[in-house]
Image 1 (cartoon, one colour):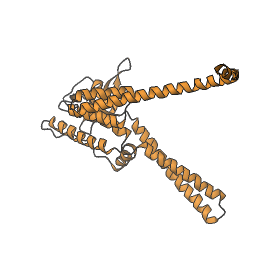
Image 2: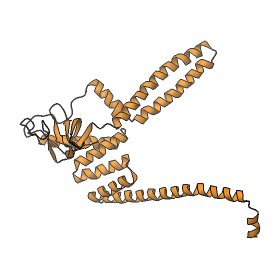
Image 3: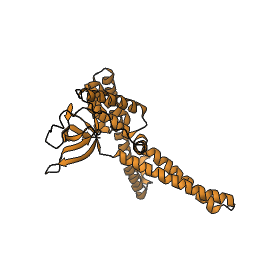
Image 4: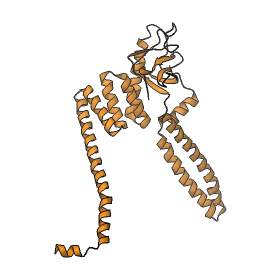
Length: 289
């Protein structure tokens, strides 16, 4: 019977079956390996969570970093890694993780709460380093326009603005169709003027989305990673003015400029915390967010 069945299959049919198998096999292999990688990532994350609950923060950090290296980062992973660093007393890496998580999801209440708390702890540490001097340890009070820009670009996700811009464009198309195909004067006016308004709002929302995307890739903000960093008025030189301007680990600063060596490597950054704290720091003491 097997020989008879095989004799009824034409060569072209055999070829088609082979082609189909060749198309399906890679997809099956991809699905299999993807499942294996996902399972491995879940296992590592579970081990890291267990180490964190057992207060073995050093092992938790190592495991969370392994997950990030092998499977990429996420808001939840950066949040957990930041918590583990915080319990180790490593405010620099904790701040870096929280800030990066905030960029991925500005609306996360957990990330924002921890970020606010850690910022207050770092400010208290900077006050303790003043030794009687009265320098501001927080950022300068933003102007109205700076506050609006921060809300649009940093406190709201660019995907949020982009989604509303896309919805507005769809409504605009509907208004245009209403204007073109309607016979009533009132409906045509609604379509015309409504379309203009909706199009204008959509363009503004799209600009907001671009502002958010630009802020996400912003490299002019960094975190001080050294235990204590003394600001210097010039690269490689500690002047009398620079003495006493010490910032602690975890301080978030704005990067104003940089100095590179002959090979193009950054050696110094000029940073700013506020009007009282402006100076140069060694590149190894700063991590760009």
